[in-house]
Every structure is written in structure tokens, then in C-alpha cells.
Length: 100
Image (cartoon, rainbow, N blue to C red; front, side, top):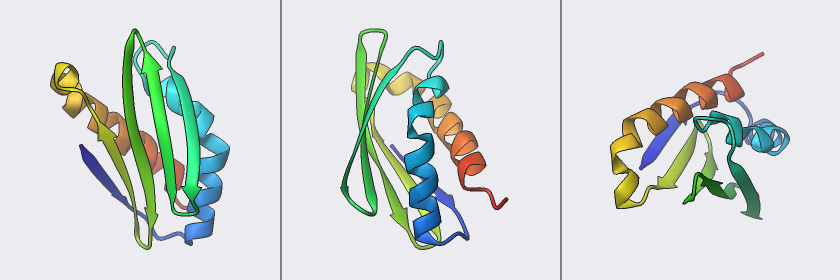
């Protein structure tokens, strides 16, 4: 699943916000009891691993000029929640990168 979110921020500002708020990703999962691990293999990619309720989901966030792209690898057993997950990512991602 790929969820692009447009922005008009400098890439460095997007990176800063992602670094400062990545610990909050677990709160977006229903129940808020997810364990989230992040890793930055380079300055424009944040890999993430989310574990909750016996399930694991891996993905990444790509910081691009003009957009942030959330890529999430949902296992087939969880494909039914894709619209809900995409909506939550879009909503929370827009809050994160909204101009202040």
C-alpha cells in the first residue's frame, strides 16, 4: 500500500518532524498498544516495523520534494484493513506536515 501526502515544507523540516514524532506512530494503531521501531538507512528514508496484537507490519516513509510517501506492506490476512490504515496514515500524516 502506498499513501502519498503532499507538502510544501523543506525536506529537512519534514525529516525533523518525522524523527521527533515517530514514537507516536504506535498510537495510530487501534488500541494504541503497538511497538514501533524506526531506522533511517539514509536521510530521505525512514524504515519502520510495527508489531501489535500478534501481527507485524513493515514499511517505510520516503521524504521527497513536495510529498511524503508512506509505503506499508500489509500481509494478505490484513488486507481488509487497508482502507482504514490508509485513512489513518493520511489523516495523521497531514497533521504532522501541516504548515504551522
